[in-house]
Length: 286
Image 1 (cartoon, rainbow, N blue to C red):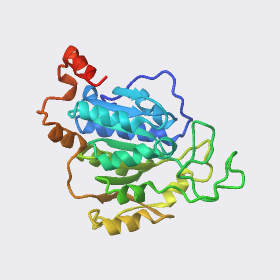
Image 2 (cartoon, rainbow, N blue to C red; image 1 turned 90 degrees about the horizontal axis):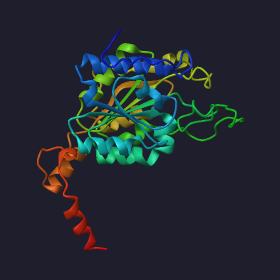
Image 3 (cartoon, rainbow, N blue to C red; image 1 turned 60 degrees about the vertical axis):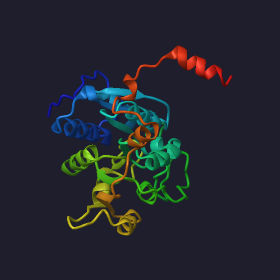
């Protein structure tokens, strides 16, 4: 399927069969089917194989430091609330190097979509355990197997009362696209954790393993029940996929800042700044 978000790329760094290809295709199709404008959409990423995603899209992009996509994404949204802003990266990038930014972004509740490619391994740096690697997982570094509990991003997000918490699987196209559309439509911070296989460095959590170890939440499941949502977050083998938690409506970061600063609806980026007056004011405190 061709989309307005397609970009001709001569060389792709992903391994054949990588789950990143599916996520890229699902994301482009979801954005296109929702009628969004590539020029009004921004994908921000850090470092890693998953973080290469915006390089393969026709979209505004910012590729920054390892684990630092979320601060940039929040700044973009505050500066221009009309943009569709996506912060995207892998489980190591977002939950490891970017772990503190992950928790802060949830609490601030900027209107951004946080897509995390969760393959339970570091794919760019040759296969060491990531924060979400399962106990017993053996790597060239963890030769005796991982001995610590895996980080639970779903439970963490719910405990911090994230606006919307979603999990899906890259191998289930219709479900993944539907979840991406729900995330994009939502107002407020959204975590969408996407299970995906790493065909090179993770021979344990394969495509078949994920397929056999996930189940779709039933239609009568109520994501507004925080206690039930937390119970779902603690489940494993199989893991639930779907909209796991939705908090009561609350103000976004950009709305709060506008109210506190008494700003009008004019986007911050378009405000004219009198640098001479600003410099004179700053000199009073030097």
